[in-house]
Image 1 (tube, helix red, strand yellow):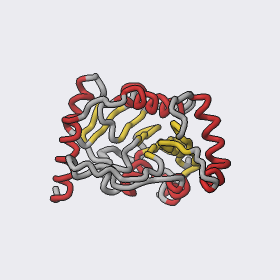
Image 2 (cartoon, rainbow, N blue to C red):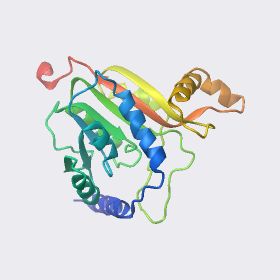
Image 3 (cartoon, one colour):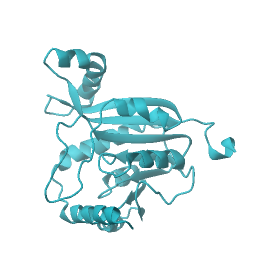
Length: 231
């Protein structure tokens, strides 16, 4: 393991050891929103990359994976099937999962492109990838206590650029928990999502804003893109 990876892993073991549920309601709502995007027909074996304490894997009945042994132990204590690994090199065969989720992870990892390519590799044809990231953070996190926190920022271009590296049938994206609204409501969120997509740029130019705190991107893998069909 290189010095960079050693420092990175040590940082996330420390973060896991320090972890407290600071905003349990808000985090649980994000997980519920994630699950709601995986509608009834999107069923099957699910892997959650960067599971932390395993809340999404637990709610979806999926498998968790994380770089931190501390988090993996916590998930096992909850009865969650878990694998200790890094998102850039997943120990799974091609087309192993029907659904792969990766929520609030890409902004943290050292090589996000490699994580996206791994998602593409392990998702079955006609399967789904669901990625979420903080939206247009003004400042990247620079907590002195941790060497690695948020390493980059994302916006709508994530949804626009993913098809270049992820052979997809379709790409949809959604905003979650809109500013300046303080209280989250699923029905209101749908309305604000439409307003943001239709008029967001205009409202920003006028000095006002309607923007999400997080953006979710749902991808469907092309049915003809399996390794077996390519060979």
